[in-house]
Length: 319
Image (spheres, rainbow, N blue to C red):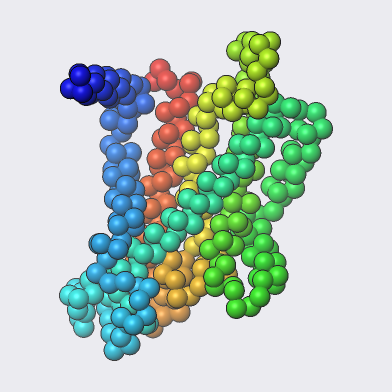
């Protein structure tokens, strides 16, 4: 009996895989070399960041491992470089390769957390606004208009400044992660809310929603079990693009000195530290983190643009 159940499960998984492999989305992916390369690069960078503890030669959070005698060492292929530090060291003697891997992890943690909060908040308010309508819709949309009138960076700077004034001075570094996530997510939920609201206005007029209403299904269940699955397409595209935007926002705030603490090796702090020594010849301290940020954001944006086109019904018949 267990073997029969196992065989049945394997058959179902095989059928699901074959169905996905023959799908239009997978076919488009397999015939897009640039997108395949972007996916491989992005996936490799994400896995490197996730497993930085095993991949990185050193732990940049361990202050006891820093040796100022190793500060400003150039990359290994440059004169004066060391094989022990492949990409050189920064002003504290910290291995740049390890700092970049851990910094990418920090940037990903902040970016993914802020996007998750933005998605939950935006979808909930968008569904509520589009389904209920009336005064509720007007209030939520006017609040969205107010939020859109502020640039994301300016809004994040404002929130960060207010919270730093409210919190005791000794708790700024401990609360920096939460402040960054809150500031970025508060400026990012509006796009999700407006997108979901527009799709909900169209979906709630369809027959399946009206039938659910006739059978007495609650509004909350209709919104989250009937309408939500049918409006997720545009949300997936937005999530892909917003991850890159959130990482850039975090890097910008950290570069300006209002993000994570200077001792935390995020990509933004590494670029800011390297910028101070760029014209004195220590180019690697800012160039390598900057290239990492550029390549990662570029691959994510390419994947987002491709996903938008692949999910566009008007382009389904095109090869």
